[in-house]
Image 1: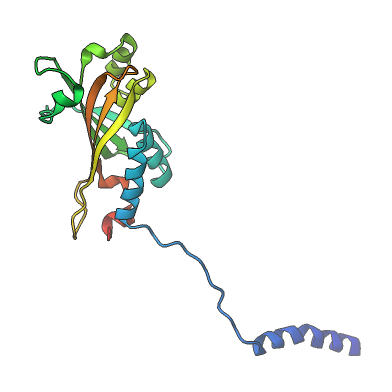
Image 2 (image 1 turned 180 degrees about the vertical axis):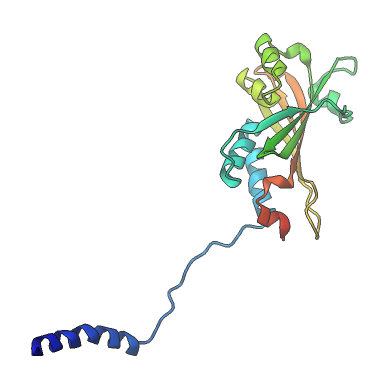
Length: 206
């Protein structure tokens, strides 16, 4: 009985000691939630240095939006957009050169995350590129990339307001796609939407 009592006292002693010792708060490091502007700046840098914008966009949706499926690409045939005034200069062609137009929407989880407007030289399409483009399931930039073409970013502009809710389009990029011999093939105007941001940043961007 005495041994049992002695054991009980020993078990109780650490508990009473803990009550007597001062309590110190353990610091917990929780990274702050990135703002909309910070996230878009990160995506912007990736796109500027990217050689394949659709692939970069797909990776972003998988990583940041937890989208397990590849981007869905939809060809928009409803509206024709006039090319920028300097399209002939950028593509190093004369105004009598025939240009084709293609608008593609990129969907992530059923929501439009980007809209690409292409003005391109159809005469530079290889038979393989023509077949891939006819399926309407692949980005023109990715088709060109597979054919050995490459992309150069010309400009990028954030479209964030000084205050208030985010607009539909939050970034605009302009790029030229070249054939492997440095012949300009396509001018592409890329508009990226606020759907690229998680819901929290869309509601409270600043």
